[in-house]
Every structure is written in structure tokens, then in C-alpha cells.
Image (cartoon, rainbow, N blue to C red; front, side, top):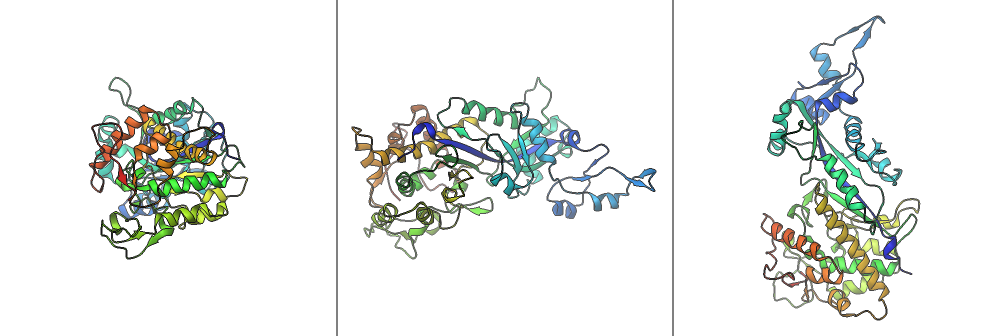
Length: 441
């Protein structure tokens, strides 16, 4: 039995750098604690941050305090622990009271209260260079004390569990993003914080079947898996080149969900009719197994665990991570879409959430085959059996019954990313809203 549309849930994970003025840091430090700014480069590199923190002066013989020498100050200053997390909570509590703080990333992923947003560390975000901060944030910092009064820290901010059909989630996400990156106004007091994303940051979306321990039926997952295989390259056109399969984003490769069917030493002849799909980009001399064989492997799989092994042979570090579908039932069993670059724009986040949710809903419809519904869209999207068949991202949106406003948004995005270095694909056809049809690649 398939899950219904009403029960789909989702959550997002935002990876970002929180940029903060020293006044915010001082507001959460213990009395008499100090910010140490004059760190030698070796000490700053050892701490992994621009500034250090020195605790309150130590008592001397139980009666008075001693101010440490500069050398002692440098030796004893420490890296941030939870300080940037509490700064983040202070900022977000203005729009969302009850934000939870988790100093341990693993604890945040396994024991967090999924009924509320929370903040945790992101050890993969190791720091911004000063040149990058000046380039991105120079005017803001100049208005409020200069570069030496600002520091930054990498954070991960997971949302609470939201319902896909709820009309309120876009506003809630927008509030969080606007609080993190307020729009500066010349007539107002300069802001004491902002946020920044780089190519090392991701924005992950988890889609769930409903309240824990709900899970997706195997047939729905098979249809989703096959759609991901066929349309992987087309969907990749929506993303910055740094987030496409084969690029090195963050500390993990974004691996293809096709990797199980990869053939070494293939033929790069475009006229090859052997049925193997060409792998573009870094390994253009190699091919995929025939698509008909991949279809057979997916739809003859007998368990969710088996399907996960097919689509995610390298663990969770894939374009779409299915490994959480086999987690213990006390944890949410979700499909994690990992490809999107870090993002602070509520409009972009909103359309991507609707798109990945729509992929799951399309898989449900394929599995259910609602009686009396035309099968034309099924054949157009799911009937691909050869790498030489034409596929179109725009056909996929049609089958998903995607909103016209969303189609226009993605058309602009594809056109923009097509002009960036590292993007091999051409522009979409500007003459109409359908876009050019393409081979399955």
C-alpha cells in the first residue's frame, strides 16, 4: 500500500558560515573573559579560527587576580566550543523561540528533537580566508568597525519536521533565512551578523513518508530509483557545476547513483549503439551498462536494503542518499537529496523542496497507477529503456504537474548555470517553455 500525498514530510539541513561582530561574541561570554585577536598565524591555524578566547583572570594566592603576559595569553587561549552556536540561537530566537543547541554533530543527527529547529557544528567548514571575507562582506564590515572586529564559524542548521502540503512552511523557512542574513539598510543601525555560503556548503532536503516509523513501499522506491538513474544528468543542470557528480564539494565526493552499473574502459564514440550510456565529464571514455539491464536490476530487487546497495554503493555520499531508509525505526527513515549548493535564498530553497517532493510523489503515482489516469506521462518519463532515448527535464516537470511559476524559475536557473565555467551543457531553448529534448546521456 502506497503512502498518500498528505503524509509526506520533509526537513532541510543548512550548511553555512555565520559571520558575527565581536559585540555578539562578548554578549555570550562569561564575565571578564576576553577575545584574543593578536594570534600568531601558527596559533590561529592550530585553533582553526581567527580569534581565540581567554577565560577570566585566575586568582593569585586566593585573594587577587593576575593578568597573564601576552605569551601566556596566546598559549592559554582556546578555540570556540559552543559560543558560535549560542550566538546563532540568540539570532534565531527572535523569529523562532525554542531553537536547540547541540555541540556534538553525531548527537544532533541521532538524538535531536525533530519537532524543533536546532543548531550544531559543521567540522567540514574549516574557515574562510580574509580575502574571501573582504570580497563578500567588505561594505558591511567597513560600516561596523572594520575587518578586525568580525569573525566567523561553520554551522549546520537542521529544520524541524515539516509537512509538504502545509501552506506555512515557506514562511517559516523564509523567517529563518532572513534572520541569518538580514538585508542591510542605510537608514538603520548596521547589523551585527550575517551568513555566507561557499561551494563547500550544501543544502540537504530529507523527504519522509510520514511520522516515524513510517517508511516508503518498495515499489515506490523502485520507481524513484529508476527516475533518478535516467534523469540524473538532466537534474544536474539545475545545480552549480561544483555540485554535480564528480566534483569535489565539501570533504565528500558527490557520487553518481549510477555507480553500480559503471563500466571501465568504454568507447567514447557518439555513434556507438551498444546500449551503454556515455559518462560525461571527467571520465568521458567510460560507459554505463545498458539501461534495460539497470531497469531489470532495480525492478527485480527484493528488499529496500538491496535497493539501497544498488543506488548507494559508496554510503551516503551520493547525489541522492537512500541509506537512511534502513536506519532503526526510532529514527526518521528519509530520502536525502544532497546535491543542492548551500543556499540562503528562500525562493530557491522553496522550489527545490517542491521539486524533490514532487519526484517522490511522481514515484507514488507510478506505483499506484491511478485507475482511469492517462498512461502517456508514464511512458514518456518511465518508458526509457536505452541510453539513446531522448529525455527532457521539462517532460519530467510536466509529469510531476509542476507549477508554471516553478518551471519558469528552473528555466532561468538552467540558463544561468549553463554559462558558468565547468558546465558542459548548453542553454535551454529560449524560444518556448519546453526546453530542448536530450538523450539520456
